[in-house]
Image (cartoon, rainbow, N blue to C red; front, top):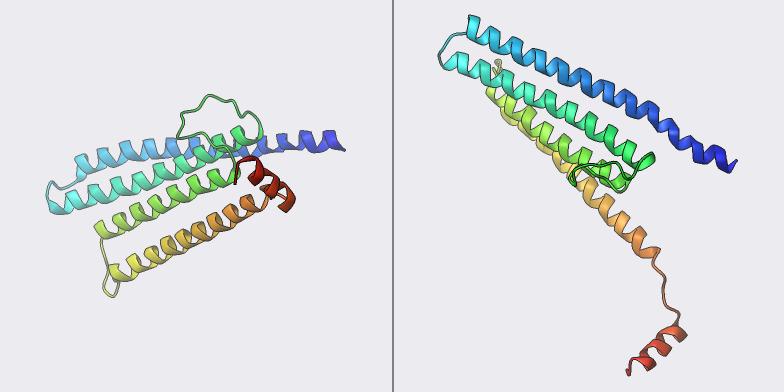
Length: 182
């Protein structure tokens, strides 16, 4: 049974390959969309404030798309490193030592994506009755909730790690104090 559990870690290959394929699809789609957007804007666009707003909005949305691809790639590489090859050569910022660190990296990129999403909405067109304030507050609440969850998660994680530290026995503590001259 032990061999089965040991080999089960290789199931993560399915997730790693799927995430890599998704990342590739997003990056290729983003690249093609970038070229298409630039051709469209310069071919049909108006060179005025409205044309600049349209170009800005499209480029901001592309940033959001590439950030999504980055999330997929970081998650794929992180899972590979954690489950299959802890010695895979990666830049320090991309290397993860545990699942908690991978989740924190993921959450950080999601927060940046939300900020970019808001920036794109702020640069875009607003219809009658829509309020950028409501949209911004909604995104701010999501970021605040995520930040609160991270704070609680770190507190629980820190408490769990402290509970695993060996506690010296009272007799051992007295013995240690005596040897240290206390």
